[in-house]
Length: 174
Ligand SMILES: NC(=O)N[C@@H](O)C(=O)O
Ligand code: NI
Image (cartoon, rainbow, N blue to C red; front, side):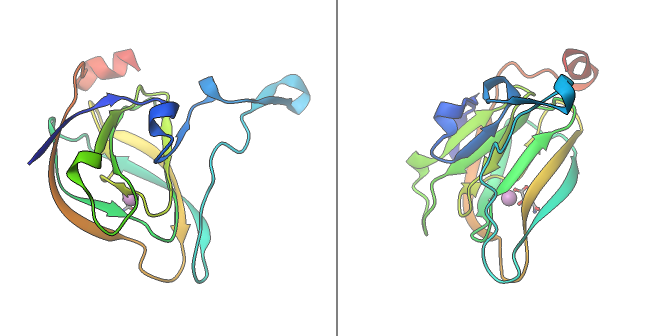
């Protein structure tokens, strides 16, 4: 069993794996007569292969038990995958570099702060969407089209997360 402690997510630490989606550290410009700011073009959406096209979906996810136990990591070789919380939900991220095998010492775990989304690059190994504290609703942007776009890599991983707020209390802090 690979034991990991989730680190706070930052754009710098996550740069080798993808993008952090966060208006607090992104450029913007004024639109709509000054009534709105556009945080523009935040991630590279990758859609590869036959009949590839971008998909916009919504996941409603039950919260995971902690510590988080995973039995595999997955990858999407034909496209990126982005998760954007709709109600400041926090989630656990587990990633490992692209490649045909995964070295356990290269696996990393992060925890978001509620204001952050992420975009996984095509081919990045990752754990499935893992919201904590309360049911979560996420906008998901990924790839549709022909071809197999989900590979699994068996691996037993346990992720520990500190300062978790559960249930109703989590709503109050959102
Ligand atoms: N299966 C699915 O659409 N979601 C996974 O790829 C995931 O990363 O949660
Ligand atoms: Ni995925």
